[in-house]
Length: 413
Ligand code: ATP
Image (cartoon, rainbow, N blue to C red):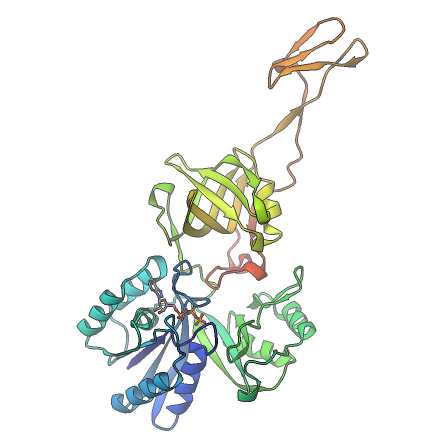
Protein backbone atom coordinates (compact mmCIF):
# COMPACT_ATOMS: atom_id res chain seq x y z
CA UNK A 1 0.00 0.00 0.00
CA UNK A 2 1.04 3.61 -0.51
CA UNK A 3 1.06 6.34 2.11
CA UNK A 4 1.38 10.08 1.44
CA UNK A 5 1.58 12.97 3.89
CA UNK A 6 2.16 16.71 3.79
CA UNK A 7 1.85 20.08 5.51
CA UNK A 8 2.65 19.07 9.08
CA UNK A 9 5.23 21.81 9.58
CA UNK A 10 5.28 25.56 10.05
CA UNK A 11 7.93 28.28 10.11
CA UNK A 12 8.03 27.83 13.90
CA UNK A 13 9.13 24.21 13.74
CA UNK A 14 8.67 20.58 12.72
CA UNK A 15 9.39 19.14 9.29
CA UNK A 16 7.31 16.64 7.35
CA UNK A 17 10.44 14.66 6.41
CA UNK A 18 11.16 14.23 10.15
CA UNK A 19 7.64 13.04 10.86
CA UNK A 20 7.80 10.64 7.90
CA UNK A 21 11.10 9.20 9.15
CA UNK A 22 9.64 8.83 12.68
CA UNK A 23 6.54 7.07 11.28
CA UNK A 24 8.76 4.68 9.32
CA UNK A 25 10.77 3.93 12.47
CA UNK A 26 7.56 3.37 14.44
CA UNK A 27 6.32 0.87 11.80
CA UNK A 28 9.56 -1.12 11.91
CA UNK A 29 8.15 -3.97 14.03
CA UNK A 30 4.64 -4.12 12.55
CA UNK A 31 5.14 -3.53 8.80
CA UNK A 32 7.76 -3.70 6.03
CA UNK A 33 8.76 -0.53 4.17
CA UNK A 34 9.50 -1.10 0.48
CA UNK A 35 12.46 0.84 -0.93
CA UNK A 36 13.22 4.37 0.14
CA UNK A 37 10.65 6.93 1.24
CA UNK A 38 10.20 9.72 -1.29
CA UNK A 39 10.59 13.46 -0.84
CA UNK A 40 8.65 15.02 -3.70
CA UNK A 41 8.91 18.73 -4.44
CA UNK A 42 5.79 20.32 -5.95
CA UNK A 43 5.04 23.65 -7.62
CA UNK A 44 7.73 26.03 -6.30
CA UNK A 45 5.67 29.11 -7.24
CA UNK A 46 2.49 28.60 -5.20
CA UNK A 47 2.00 30.87 -2.18
CA UNK A 48 0.95 28.19 0.34
CA UNK A 49 4.34 26.60 0.81
CA UNK A 50 6.22 26.94 4.09
CA UNK A 51 9.64 26.64 2.42
CA UNK A 52 10.33 24.23 -0.42
CA UNK A 53 6.88 22.73 -1.08
CA UNK A 54 7.95 19.20 -0.26
CA UNK A 55 5.55 16.28 0.27
CA UNK A 56 6.34 12.72 1.42
CA UNK A 57 5.31 9.21 0.40
CA UNK A 58 6.36 5.64 1.09
CA UNK A 59 5.33 2.12 0.07
CA UNK A 60 4.62 -0.34 2.88
CA UNK A 61 3.43 -3.94 3.34
CA UNK A 62 1.43 -4.90 6.42
CA UNK A 63 -1.93 -4.53 8.10
CA UNK A 64 -3.57 -1.36 6.67
CA UNK A 65 -5.38 -0.65 9.95
CA UNK A 66 -2.13 -0.74 11.94
CA UNK A 67 -0.30 1.40 9.39
CA UNK A 68 -3.11 3.94 9.17
CA UNK A 69 -3.49 4.21 12.95
CA UNK A 70 0.26 4.83 13.34
CA UNK A 71 0.29 7.47 10.58
CA UNK A 72 -2.76 9.39 11.77
CA UNK A 73 -1.91 9.20 15.50
CA UNK A 74 1.59 10.51 14.87
CA UNK A 75 0.41 13.35 12.62
CA UNK A 76 -2.25 14.39 15.14
CA UNK A 77 0.28 14.28 18.01
CA UNK A 78 2.87 16.40 16.26
CA UNK A 79 0.67 18.98 14.56
CA UNK A 80 2.02 22.53 14.80
CA UNK A 81 -0.60 25.14 15.73
CA UNK A 82 -1.52 27.91 13.28
CA UNK A 83 -3.68 28.54 10.22
CA UNK A 84 -0.83 27.78 7.80
CA UNK A 85 -0.40 24.18 8.96
CA UNK A 86 -3.06 21.99 7.38
CA UNK A 87 -1.85 18.39 7.57
CA UNK A 88 -3.18 15.76 5.22
CA UNK A 89 -2.48 12.07 4.72
CA UNK A 90 -3.78 9.33 2.47
CA UNK A 91 -3.43 5.57 2.37
CA UNK A 92 -4.06 3.86 -0.95
CA UNK A 93 -4.33 0.08 -0.85
CA UNK A 94 -2.62 -0.49 -4.22
CA UNK A 95 0.86 -1.67 -5.22
CA UNK A 96 1.44 1.29 -7.53
CA UNK A 97 -0.31 4.60 -8.21
CA UNK A 98 -3.03 4.63 -10.90
CA UNK A 99 -2.42 6.88 -13.95
CA UNK A 100 -4.94 9.44 -12.70
CA UNK A 101 -2.73 10.05 -9.66
CA UNK A 102 0.35 10.47 -11.81
CA UNK A 103 -1.55 13.09 -13.82
CA UNK A 104 -2.49 14.78 -10.54
CA UNK A 105 1.21 14.90 -9.56
CA UNK A 106 2.02 16.67 -12.82
CA UNK A 107 -0.69 19.23 -12.24
CA UNK A 108 0.55 19.84 -8.69
CA UNK A 109 4.00 20.53 -10.18
CA UNK A 110 2.80 22.97 -12.82
CA UNK A 111 -0.43 24.56 -11.59
CA UNK A 112 -2.40 25.52 -8.53
CA UNK A 113 -4.70 22.66 -7.53
CA UNK A 114 -7.89 22.97 -5.44
CA UNK A 115 -8.41 21.29 -2.05
CA UNK A 116 -11.88 20.02 -2.93
CA UNK A 117 -10.76 18.30 -6.13
CA UNK A 118 -7.99 16.59 -4.15
CA UNK A 119 -10.45 15.30 -1.57
CA UNK A 120 -12.81 14.13 -4.34
CA UNK A 121 -10.00 12.30 -6.09
CA UNK A 122 -8.96 10.60 -2.84
CA UNK A 123 -12.54 9.42 -2.27
CA UNK A 124 -12.91 8.34 -5.91
CA UNK A 125 -9.77 6.20 -5.54
CA UNK A 126 -11.13 4.63 -2.35
CA UNK A 127 -8.16 5.98 -0.38
CA UNK A 128 -8.26 6.48 3.35
CA UNK A 129 -8.14 10.16 4.12
CA UNK A 130 -7.02 12.11 7.16
CA UNK A 131 -6.73 15.87 7.49
CA UNK A 132 -6.74 18.75 9.96
CA UNK A 133 -7.58 22.42 9.34
CA UNK A 134 -8.63 23.01 5.75
CA UNK A 135 -6.91 19.80 4.61
CA UNK A 136 -4.63 21.46 2.05
CA UNK A 137 -2.05 18.81 2.87
CA UNK A 138 -4.18 16.27 0.99
CA UNK A 139 -2.95 17.86 -2.25
CA UNK A 140 0.69 17.15 -1.47
CA UNK A 141 -0.08 13.73 0.03
CA UNK A 142 -1.83 12.60 -3.18
CA UNK A 143 0.77 14.14 -5.49
CA UNK A 144 3.65 12.51 -3.59
CA UNK A 145 2.01 9.09 -3.94
CA UNK A 146 1.35 9.72 -7.65
CA UNK A 147 4.85 10.99 -8.47
CA UNK A 148 6.68 9.10 -11.18
CA UNK A 149 10.33 10.05 -10.95
CA UNK A 150 12.21 8.66 -13.91
CA UNK A 151 15.74 9.68 -12.90
CA UNK A 152 15.59 10.32 -9.17
CA UNK A 153 18.17 12.05 -7.05
CA UNK A 154 18.77 11.32 -3.35
CA UNK A 155 18.88 13.35 -0.16
CA UNK A 156 20.30 12.19 3.14
CA UNK A 157 18.72 14.19 5.93
CA UNK A 158 20.43 14.15 9.33
CA UNK A 159 18.25 15.15 12.30
CA UNK A 160 19.22 16.90 15.50
CA UNK A 161 19.05 15.43 18.97
CA UNK A 162 15.81 16.40 20.71
CA UNK A 163 17.53 18.68 23.25
CA UNK A 164 19.29 20.65 20.50
CA UNK A 165 16.25 21.56 18.40
CA UNK A 166 15.76 25.33 18.43
CA UNK A 167 19.35 26.12 19.48
CA UNK A 168 22.02 27.34 16.98
CA UNK A 169 23.24 24.52 14.71
CA UNK A 170 26.85 23.42 14.52
CA UNK A 171 27.82 22.21 11.05
CA UNK A 172 31.50 22.81 10.28
CA UNK A 173 31.71 24.93 7.11
CA UNK A 174 35.23 23.81 6.22
CA UNK A 175 34.23 20.13 6.30
CA UNK A 176 31.27 20.91 3.99
CA UNK A 177 33.54 22.83 1.61
CA UNK A 178 36.03 19.91 1.58
CA UNK A 179 33.23 17.41 1.01
CA UNK A 180 31.88 19.51 -1.86
CA UNK A 181 35.34 19.77 -3.43
CA UNK A 182 35.80 15.99 -3.19
CA UNK A 183 32.39 14.77 -4.36
CA UNK A 184 30.84 17.45 -6.62
CA UNK A 185 28.84 16.91 -8.84
CA UNK A 186 27.79 13.43 -7.58
CA UNK A 187 26.91 15.48 -4.50
CA UNK A 188 25.58 18.94 -5.39
CA UNK A 189 24.12 22.15 -3.95
CA UNK A 190 26.09 21.73 -0.72
CA UNK A 191 28.36 24.74 -0.58
CA UNK A 192 28.51 28.12 -2.31
CA UNK A 193 32.18 29.06 -2.09
CA UNK A 194 31.81 32.48 -3.64
CA UNK A 195 29.05 33.52 -1.24
CA UNK A 196 30.47 31.59 1.75
CA UNK A 197 27.14 29.79 2.14
CA UNK A 198 26.64 26.32 3.66
CA UNK A 199 23.56 25.20 1.75
CA UNK A 200 23.07 21.85 3.50
CA UNK A 201 21.99 23.37 6.83
CA UNK A 202 18.59 25.06 7.14
CA UNK A 203 18.19 28.33 9.08
CA UNK A 204 14.78 27.55 10.62
CA UNK A 205 14.14 26.03 14.08
CA UNK A 206 13.18 22.66 12.53
CA UNK A 207 14.68 19.25 13.55
CA UNK A 208 16.86 19.02 10.42
CA UNK A 209 20.60 19.36 11.05
CA UNK A 210 21.57 19.08 7.38
CA UNK A 211 20.42 17.59 4.09
CA UNK A 212 22.92 16.35 1.51
CA UNK A 213 21.82 15.96 -2.10
CA UNK A 214 23.38 13.68 -4.64
CA UNK A 215 22.93 11.48 -7.67
CA UNK A 216 23.12 8.19 -5.72
CA UNK A 217 22.46 6.82 -2.28
CA UNK A 218 26.13 5.86 -1.97
CA UNK A 219 27.27 9.41 -2.80
CA UNK A 220 25.12 11.08 -0.13
CA UNK A 221 26.19 8.49 2.49
CA UNK A 222 29.90 9.05 1.67
CA UNK A 223 29.34 12.79 1.89
CA UNK A 224 27.67 12.58 5.30
CA UNK A 225 30.68 10.69 6.63
CA UNK A 226 32.84 13.71 5.69
CA UNK A 227 30.75 16.38 7.46
CA UNK A 228 31.78 17.43 10.98
CA UNK A 229 28.84 18.60 13.09
CA UNK A 230 27.08 18.41 16.43
CA UNK A 231 25.78 14.88 17.23
CA UNK A 232 23.28 13.46 14.75
CA UNK A 233 20.24 11.83 16.33
CA UNK A 234 19.46 9.71 13.23
CA UNK A 235 19.45 10.10 9.48
CA UNK A 236 17.22 8.98 6.61
CA UNK A 237 17.87 8.78 2.87
CA UNK A 238 15.02 9.86 0.59
CA UNK A 239 14.52 9.31 -3.11
CA UNK A 240 13.55 12.66 -4.61
CA UNK A 241 12.60 14.60 -7.73
CA UNK A 242 14.95 17.40 -6.67
CA UNK A 243 17.36 18.70 -9.30
CA UNK A 244 15.40 17.05 -12.12
CA UNK A 245 13.73 20.13 -13.70
CA UNK A 246 10.44 18.24 -13.31
CA UNK A 247 8.70 21.59 -12.81
CA UNK A 248 9.81 22.94 -16.21
CA UNK A 249 7.57 22.78 -19.31
CA UNK A 250 8.42 24.03 -22.79
CA UNK A 251 6.29 27.03 -23.68
CA UNK A 252 6.08 30.13 -25.81
CA UNK A 253 5.08 33.52 -24.45
CA UNK A 254 1.42 32.89 -25.37
CA UNK A 255 1.41 29.87 -23.05
CA UNK A 256 2.63 31.67 -19.95
CA UNK A 257 0.39 31.39 -16.89
CA UNK A 258 0.86 32.43 -13.29
CA UNK A 259 2.74 29.79 -11.24
CA UNK A 260 3.96 27.75 -14.23
CA UNK A 261 7.68 27.11 -14.64
CA UNK A 262 8.84 27.17 -18.25
CA UNK A 263 11.66 26.97 -20.71
CA UNK A 264 11.34 29.29 -23.67
CA UNK A 265 13.47 30.71 -26.44
CA UNK A 266 13.51 34.26 -27.76
CA UNK A 267 15.53 37.40 -28.35
CA UNK A 268 16.25 40.18 -25.92
CA UNK A 269 13.88 42.97 -26.93
CA UNK A 270 14.43 45.47 -24.09
CA UNK A 271 17.92 45.90 -22.71
CA UNK A 272 18.61 44.87 -19.08
CA UNK A 273 18.18 47.58 -16.49
CA UNK A 274 18.68 47.68 -12.73
CA UNK A 275 15.94 48.76 -10.39
CA UNK A 276 16.15 49.41 -6.64
CA UNK A 277 17.65 46.71 -4.38
CA UNK A 278 19.80 45.39 -7.23
CA UNK A 279 17.09 43.52 -9.13
CA UNK A 280 17.72 43.32 -12.91
CA UNK A 281 15.02 43.10 -15.59
CA UNK A 282 14.95 42.72 -19.36
CA UNK A 283 12.33 41.69 -21.93
CA UNK A 284 12.43 38.67 -24.18
CA UNK A 285 10.34 38.34 -27.37
CA UNK A 286 9.69 35.13 -29.26
CA UNK A 287 7.65 36.31 -32.26
CA UNK A 288 4.41 35.50 -30.44
CA UNK A 289 4.72 38.02 -27.63
CA UNK A 290 7.14 39.08 -24.96
CA UNK A 291 7.79 38.53 -21.27
CA UNK A 292 9.71 40.36 -18.58
CA UNK A 293 12.61 38.29 -17.24
CA UNK A 294 13.94 38.99 -13.73
CA UNK A 295 17.18 38.26 -11.93
CA UNK A 296 16.49 39.35 -8.37
CA UNK A 297 19.14 40.44 -5.87
CA UNK A 298 19.41 37.01 -4.19
CA UNK A 299 20.70 35.57 -7.48
CA UNK A 300 23.96 37.44 -6.75
CA UNK A 301 26.66 37.07 -9.43
CA UNK A 302 24.19 35.63 -11.97
CA UNK A 303 23.02 39.25 -12.41
CA UNK A 304 26.36 40.17 -14.00
CA UNK A 305 25.54 37.82 -16.89
CA UNK A 306 22.07 39.28 -17.20
CA UNK A 307 23.41 42.85 -17.14
CA UNK A 308 25.77 41.98 -20.02
CA UNK A 309 22.90 40.97 -22.33
CA UNK A 310 21.89 43.26 -25.19
CA UNK A 311 18.95 43.69 -27.56
CA UNK A 312 19.04 40.97 -30.22
CA UNK A 313 20.77 38.27 -28.16
CA UNK A 314 19.24 34.83 -28.83
CA UNK A 315 18.50 33.03 -25.54
CA UNK A 316 16.74 30.11 -23.92
CA UNK A 317 15.53 30.94 -20.42
CA UNK A 318 14.28 28.71 -17.59
CA UNK A 319 12.17 30.07 -14.74
CA UNK A 320 8.96 30.42 -12.75
CA UNK A 321 6.18 32.71 -13.92
CA UNK A 322 4.84 35.10 -11.30
CA UNK A 323 2.28 37.89 -11.43
CA UNK A 324 3.75 41.34 -10.69
CA UNK A 325 2.39 44.88 -11.05
CA UNK A 326 4.35 45.01 -14.35
CA UNK A 327 2.74 41.87 -15.78
CA UNK A 328 3.74 38.22 -15.87
CA UNK A 329 7.41 38.01 -14.95
CA UNK A 330 9.73 35.08 -15.35
CA UNK A 331 12.04 34.58 -12.35
CA UNK A 332 15.20 33.28 -13.99
CA UNK A 333 16.72 30.00 -12.79
CA UNK A 334 19.15 29.60 -15.67
CA UNK A 335 19.71 30.74 -19.23
CA UNK A 336 21.55 29.69 -22.35
CA UNK A 337 23.01 32.26 -24.73
CA UNK A 338 22.87 30.82 -28.26
CA UNK A 339 24.20 33.83 -30.16
CA UNK A 340 25.17 37.32 -29.14
CA UNK A 341 24.04 40.29 -31.23
CA UNK A 342 27.06 42.03 -32.76
CA UNK A 343 27.33 45.47 -31.26
CA UNK A 344 29.57 48.17 -32.70
CA UNK A 345 30.60 51.63 -31.57
CA UNK A 346 31.74 54.49 -33.83
CA UNK A 347 35.32 55.72 -33.92
CA UNK A 348 34.86 59.50 -33.88
CA UNK A 349 36.52 60.88 -37.05
CA UNK A 350 38.99 63.77 -36.89
CA UNK A 351 39.15 66.87 -39.13
CA UNK A 352 41.20 70.07 -38.98
CA UNK A 353 43.29 68.48 -36.22
CA UNK A 354 40.37 67.86 -33.83
CA UNK A 355 37.53 65.36 -33.18
CA UNK A 356 34.40 65.96 -35.22
CA UNK A 357 31.07 66.68 -33.53
CA UNK A 358 28.11 64.28 -33.58
CA UNK A 359 25.11 65.54 -35.56
CA UNK A 360 22.75 63.22 -33.66
CA UNK A 361 22.18 59.55 -32.88
CA UNK A 362 23.27 57.48 -35.94
CA UNK A 363 23.42 60.70 -38.01
CA UNK A 364 27.15 61.10 -38.60
CA UNK A 365 29.64 63.86 -37.70
CA UNK A 366 30.45 67.45 -38.67
CA UNK A 367 33.74 69.37 -38.35
CA UNK A 368 33.37 72.30 -35.97
CA UNK A 369 35.96 74.31 -37.94
CA UNK A 370 35.45 73.69 -41.69
CA UNK A 371 31.88 72.27 -41.60
CA UNK A 372 32.84 69.05 -43.47
CA UNK A 373 30.45 66.14 -42.87
CA UNK A 374 30.98 62.37 -42.53
CA UNK A 375 27.69 60.45 -43.00
CA UNK A 376 26.96 57.68 -40.46
CA UNK A 377 27.59 54.89 -42.97
CA UNK A 378 31.10 56.20 -43.64
CA UNK A 379 32.03 56.45 -39.93
CA UNK A 380 34.52 53.66 -39.02
CA UNK A 381 33.19 51.30 -36.35
CA UNK A 382 34.72 48.75 -33.99
CA UNK A 383 33.09 45.73 -32.37
CA UNK A 384 32.10 46.19 -28.74
CA UNK A 385 33.59 43.63 -26.34
CA UNK A 386 30.44 42.02 -24.87
CA UNK A 387 31.84 40.71 -21.58
CA UNK A 388 29.77 37.52 -21.87
CA UNK A 389 29.99 34.46 -24.12
CA UNK A 390 27.54 31.99 -25.63
CA UNK A 391 26.91 29.16 -23.16
CA UNK A 392 24.78 28.23 -20.17
CA UNK A 393 24.61 30.16 -16.92
CA UNK A 394 22.71 29.41 -13.69
CA UNK A 395 21.92 31.11 -10.41
CA UNK A 396 24.45 30.26 -7.68
CA UNK A 397 23.81 27.55 -5.08
CA UNK A 398 22.66 30.17 -2.54
CA UNK A 399 19.68 30.97 -4.81
CA UNK A 400 19.03 27.50 -6.26
CA UNK A 401 15.50 26.08 -6.27
CA UNK A 402 15.06 22.50 -5.07
CA UNK A 403 13.75 21.29 -8.43
CA UNK A 404 16.21 23.17 -10.64
CA UNK A 405 18.70 20.87 -12.36
CA UNK A 406 22.26 22.12 -11.84
CA UNK A 407 24.10 22.66 -15.14
CA UNK A 408 26.76 20.19 -13.99
CA UNK A 409 24.12 17.43 -14.23
CA UNK A 410 22.80 18.46 -17.64
CA UNK A 411 24.08 17.01 -20.90
CA UNK A 412 26.23 19.40 -22.92
CA UNK A 413 24.20 21.59 -25.29
P1 ATP B 1 8.69 22.14 3.91
O1 ATP B 1 9.47 22.35 2.66
O2 ATP B 1 9.31 22.68 5.11
O3 ATP B 1 8.24 20.71 4.07
P2 ATP B 1 6.60 23.17 2.47
O4 ATP B 1 7.21 24.32 1.78
O5 ATP B 1 6.54 21.82 1.87
O6 ATP B 1 7.34 22.98 3.80
P3 ATP B 1 3.93 22.80 3.29
O7 ATP B 1 3.84 23.07 4.74
O8 ATP B 1 3.98 21.40 2.85
O9 ATP B 1 5.16 23.64 2.77
O10 ATP B 1 2.74 23.55 2.57
C1 ATP B 1 2.51 23.48 1.17
C2 ATP B 1 1.02 23.26 0.97
O11 ATP B 1 0.67 23.50 -0.38
C3 ATP B 1 0.62 21.82 1.26
O12 ATP B 1 -0.59 21.84 1.95
C4 ATP B 1 0.41 21.19 -0.12
O13 ATP B 1 -0.55 20.18 -0.11
C5 ATP B 1 -0.06 22.39 -0.90
N1 ATP B 1 0.25 22.30 -2.32
C6 ATP B 1 1.32 21.71 -2.90
N2 ATP B 1 1.29 21.86 -4.24
C7 ATP B 1 0.18 22.56 -4.52
C8 ATP B 1 -0.42 23.02 -5.73
N3 ATP B 1 0.16 22.80 -6.90
N4 ATP B 1 -1.58 23.72 -5.65
C9 ATP B 1 -2.14 23.97 -4.45
N5 ATP B 1 -1.65 23.58 -3.26
C10 ATP B 1 -0.49 22.86 -3.29
